[in-house]
Length: 550
View 1 (cartoon, rainbow, N blue to C red):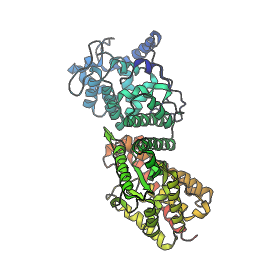
View 2 (view 1 turned 60 degrees about the horizontal axis):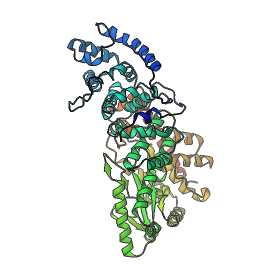
View 3 (view 1 turned 180 degrees about the horizontal axis):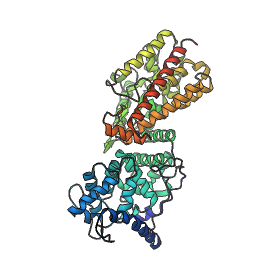
View 4 (view 1 turned 60 degrees about the vertical axis):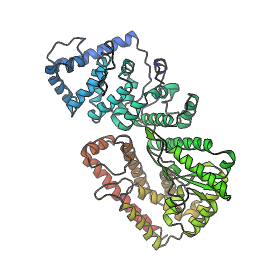
């Protein structure tokens, strides 16, 4: 399905900028009707920009003089290199090759897809595009990613004409600037871009549920396409300041729920649905998912008939296979290791077996992990029985000095998994896991007073502060540091295109990550991470100490 000109021209985006900056310009109303008056206005703008070229190229500037002509001229090409250097590009040769691809419609294969009449399409906007790319975080990365997207649109005249619109151009350049991952995916799924601009889908008022319903009406429902479309939409809104990280995280969790439930309802018949429950754990359970987060799930049944139990187990395995189906990328990575007895146990846990396990063999960290258990699909009555078992078991935990030492040992074991000299935003001392432990363990310790456990980390910290279980400075520090670490995680996923949690050693990647997070220099960024981790670890140790003395 190729994006139609009429539907894109009629698309609008209404929103209000929350973060004014050069790189995060607000999305304005999109209207791609290029009338004569607007075309003349653009010509005047290009005339001004063309004066820059006249200073660089000692040849007469004519309307028909375009970058492709300069590329083919070896003398002029040397001056073109100086021009690109002045535009903050570092790898000049690569930048020129990218421009050659973009301006001539030349694919990596060598095939040129432009007709003679289309060859000037990019040249008409080249000054505008290059000027704006030169102001991005790292122009080389932005141009690389822009070329990939342009190639996905097959360097079409229509795509270049759309770039004359301020809002469309800023969307494309924001994606190019901040996300290598989504630039690559968009280059392979450009047919979905029409849908993202349809029916005001870029409005901050639209939810993931709305997009899911819209997608269902569109015809052939492909879960991979829905996931990509929704994530790209959320990324655009997040980068532009309309959706903060916590809303982003909630929407990404809703997306995972919708996909999981769709597969569940298609996979199990009505009787089977009443015999099983699916629980979300980890960040799926706490509604704190990020781009590329795993799906931590647990399957539980009250079925006692062995034959029906085997059938249900096969259905669970089939569901996991569908959730991990690969089409360019995996739909999700699914983790079922938090089930009773871990990875060597059956995927489907029996309710009675779970009760016995929790009562007699479950270690503290396993009980702690279940504090984030949340109903996803199936029989809610079974889920309520599971939650009762978890709460009853938590109330039996004795918070002794021995347990406090055990908690510190658990963290030390986790830290040993970090490669020497690396900084891990999840596992390092004072990183994300310390904050999550604080939120979970304090709620376990004072469950009788709190009556319920808040799964979401930041909401839990707020609840603990209001109940005077953490101090105000602790609450502010932990909340701010948690959001900071999650932002790092986000940019590592979308910009560096990695699922690792360790900060990169390569200076180029570290610089890119630092700039994405608003730091001018990598050293400044690293120092900020270190100081936050140091303070978080101090609070963690103090709180672990406190739980045994109150």
